[in-house]
Image (cartoon, rainbow, N blue to C red; front, side, top):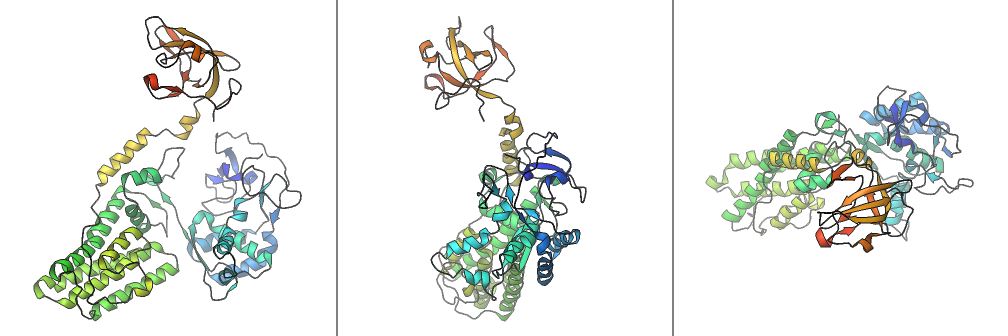
Length: 515
């Protein structure tokens, strides 16, 4: 079994960027082989004494496909980083790409003579787009409309580290099949979201905020709004507490949610929950039309941040329009009906980004499920439900403090991996004079016997313990307890008489490592 190429890192031989992986450089987009890296090290242990051995692989011959791939890329007119990364690789010269790996997890390679090998992840992952369509339309050939039709436009929204797999490897596979597959039309790649100060997210180094903790401190809809509003589409973006507050409190709640609550509460309080039976103000209809046009264009080019911002721009206009028309003073029913129509259109536009919130808004409006086909429909005389506040401003300082508290409670993987946990066998048990809760245990861990002082007398008798296998930490700094040097710690759950020692579910040799 070989170390996977992505678990080797070093300096990129093309652009000189540090942190390049054994299969690609995220900085310049170059596809690499592990042996090309400068000063390569193992990503797990950090050691540089990596041994390279020869092994047989099966390849996708990108060099042979180069003329067709160049023609394909030219026909698609990719933009920004997608065009830059792809063209650079073509200019450097496409090379055969290994499609098999010598690792013990993955899809088994089906080729004769490839027993024990698996398919390289990017040799099968993108093909999942095709197989997913086949699975969805299981039992018929409707999936072919998406993969062989001319009236199809395929849009892919990906991260910039996956560009070559979507612009060269995946199309190369489809072309090589000779079956006439429809090739990806548009590929939009985001830049990176980094942590505060520009540091890359890393679980092992304890850098960043991950989903479980994020959801523990703030609702998912608010995270969705912030992340999509600040989606890194043109450059890398650093997470910022200030930007979180601006997006959530300043835009989503104070602007968008404020207009929605303002209009629906007005219909409820002044019109007895009945939408005025009026035509929409031409000014409002025109502004909605402009926003929809820009929104659709943004979605089509996978610029999701721009699309969300276009939806939010309706709230800016809507608040200004409602304030200018002042229907509470003028009794202007057209202004109220027009504002209601604007809010409905905005809620439908928001639905892909904050679906739970948009659904609640549309339910109050009596519209039901969000439907793009209904975005122009005017709900004259419709009855609405009870208006209520759906969102509250967030306390960013409180959230920040909670995140910092969670971070303090975490142990990095590197720290955890330093613990040496082994299975031991208790060979002798002695009571410690003057200590009602403590035993002095001698534990066999294979090549040596360790002493452990354990407070388990309330639960276990001497007879219970002799010969029992236990899990212990063997590399803790020794400590003296009641005059006895304790060299290891037993792992247990519970307290007092309810304590339970951890043990393997079957006997294993003493000294067996846990991990």
